[in-house]
Image (cartoon, rainbow, N blue to C red; front, side, top):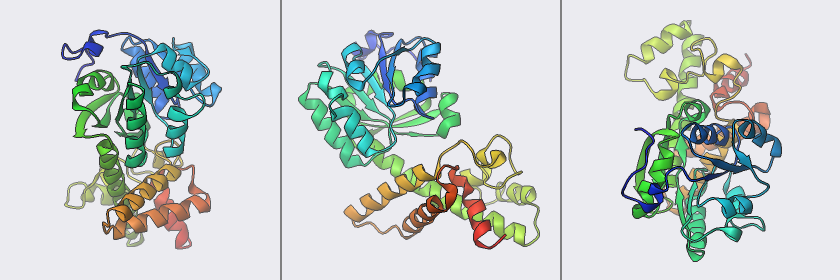
Length: 313
């Protein structure tokens, strides 16, 4: 879908007015760059000032705090690591809600607890602003290519205004219902992703131990009923695919720490809703152990290497 204004929203009619962006990490930086490429002036900030330099060099205006962003933009996106970061950026002493203007659209693409999204929405509403959760799937590569999938929760009447911006950064924008539902969809997706990656790593390792060539095994899996995203698009075995973290010593991609965090969110929500997730719980424990064994900053597909080390290879 092309990035274009829609006549259905007065906010969209403003079109290329400045967009605020808070959080310029591995995901936020390429997302903000895509807004710039689509002609939107970007007003940005990050807790680490050095993260802002590259964006500033290509035309973004950099300010010192989320509150300053809120003073200068009435459409703001945030992309932050965790629930505490989101709470601080929105409600802290220099937070967005200290200076937010009435009618501002706030879109949070962090992956956090759905309950925190609902709390932020309630706090924003008291200030006359609108908060929507819009977590993403696709990783750093999709962020760079503007091919992310956004899962959006919030007031349906504001969805078109949010969609105008999100389609500049993603290939799929899906409305999921009320605030928090975007987070719910993201948590479910990442739990399945984690389980699938562990299964793929185990399967590939077993096949290699049985004497199969890993490229041949991957080819067979991907034309058979065992095919999944982790085997076909993001294979965890070094040498099977190019352009994925396993081909680069598991650098880049989606960190093991972040996967463990997302699985913790799944565990918490499962506990609160009394939902059995035996494989999700086991996946959570595996990635937590990996974090304590030196894999915290490696891509989560390094679970293949972790399993090999566990067996003493």
